[in-house]
Image 1 (cartoon, rainbow, N blue to C red):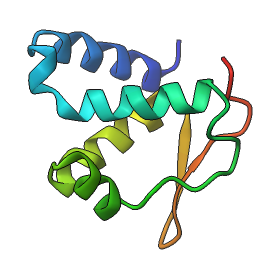
Image 2 (tube, rainbow, N blue to C red):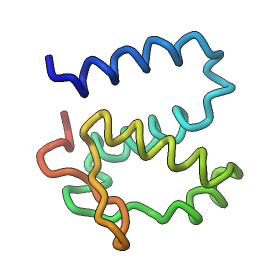
Image 3 (cartoon, rainbow, N blue to C red):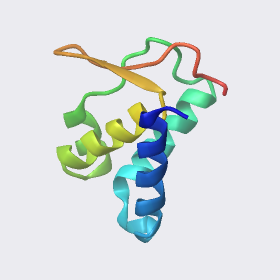
Length: 94
């Protein structure tokens, strides 16, 4: 198991202690994950911007960034500096 996977697993365990309704970033990440796995979002599709998602979900940009971090830990997305966050190749429908 890679170091990233171990850290991700530990963080997931830690955050499971927080009541789920308090973890808005997880709800956002779960919804984006579902859209990727259903095929609605395909490899290399650009996700909405941090500001757009923050407005859509009525949360802070920090919360959206945390959701993006969780999606990255799940290896579902990748970021390009100054370009945005995109769906990772080969992760849809898995």
